[in-house]
Image (tube, rainbow, N blue to C red; front, side, top):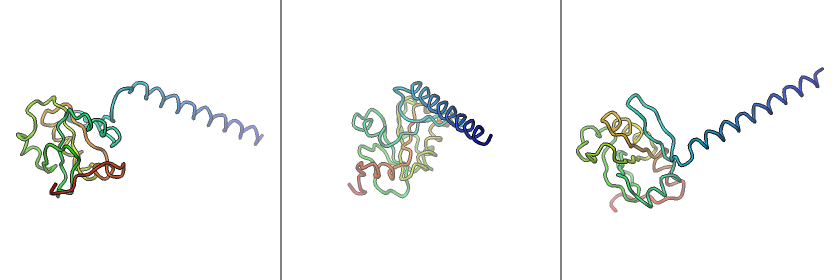
Amino acid sequence: MMLGMLLLALAGCSTESNKDVMSSDSSTDAKAGQVGTRVETSHGSYTNLQPIELKPMLDNKDFFLVDTHIPPEGRLPKTDLRIPFDQVEENIAEFPADKNVKIVLSCRSGRMSSEASETLLKLGYTNVYNLNGGMNDWKDAGYEIVPEGK
């Protein structure tokens, strides 16, 4: 009897594992060609990027790159603007006027740039990306950080 219950439990685990694999495969197929992970907010959504996703985008840059970290502790190559995360709204004139332009935000850990991403959505921007894990994860992935003063 105990052996039968054990076999039944193992069969159930096996079936559950196959379901998980199938659902993750189908979600991967649905996202083919999509970069990053969408983050929903009360003002819309932005996309979290991993360093491995941002690197090829940076190599073929077609976006506005903003460092939002305070205090300044270096920046990603090709950064266009540095605005503290909590001063985005006050400095919105520094951002592109076209609210559909692609904007990528970064900071040291990703927390400040996430907050800045939400602020841009609140102000009507529609094509906002955030470097998830920030410059810490960027550097851990082996990519260059431009030191302050250069």
